[in-house]
Image (cartoon, rainbow, N blue to C red; front, top):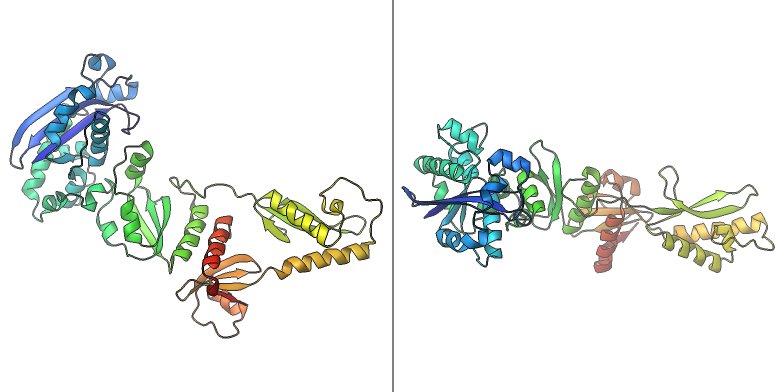
Length: 436
């Protein structure tokens, strides 16, 4: 038993927009059993673009019932049926949200006639309702009106029933099947082909551009979870409509997937990623020689052309370290630009520069070079305290040479998130470190 539904709305997402018209065609798989249609008063103005497209004006809906006044009737019509629509997630999300607000909960099996048409009638150039109606000579006398589009979808569905040789409808009516929740422009085969391995996945738009990057311990399970609900927020609906393709890269472990995801987000800057898309301001401690021959340590923004003695994400951390150096090595803070106070006397340049060398030696002593083993044959290389890259090392040896190791690894740019992932992994897995 099917309920073929079409709605007209004031906008593209159910949480902030309203239904202006709804039509429901009841179908038993053989013939139409009944129809329901009504305008809905959205209790808010309809913008001019929507009015021009649908022909539904503020005046037309002024005396129409509000949704909560017809909610019980709508609920009773669809509650025991399979919900069908062209781009079903859109219509279903609106109806579900508005029924919930009115006090009625639905959780129905669904069929999307866009997806179903792609399976039963492969090879057509487009699968919009207007294009399919033209291709199959389906007459729609009320395009962009709920009843016109619902009746056209019904005729399309009947054609699908007549040509469904492989039982696609039967498969889609299985409640909770993952395919019901997939974006309208994405085939179920994309999910089926994905491995159950750690990795990084990419969602692509119609032009092939990456619009989202994510990491996973289990690629198939994680990607499926993106489509396991039908939230009616604008962000969710816009997200689903944009996904046309999925690609992925296998990784050796959760750690390497975390690192690679961060690298790829920084490289691609995808539209729908929110976290990690920010400028990471970094500070460095640099050494220079002043006009009097004194070696000075100073804090400045990290520069690509100069190698800092140490790097920090917070200015306060850099200042604290210089204060510690000043106390430990008995160096006046003004020589680190930490104080405007002028000392009564300065040490000789030779004596002072010897202390600065001791500071630099102390810092460099903490910059170890080591490998981090992720549990497979893959390793992460940290060179002098900085992330270098990662990859599979085929030959390690008892006394591995750094040059030979680097030849087996892929270098990647470092960022603060990557540093954090590696440090946290080492804390929890101290035996994974091989000091070189």
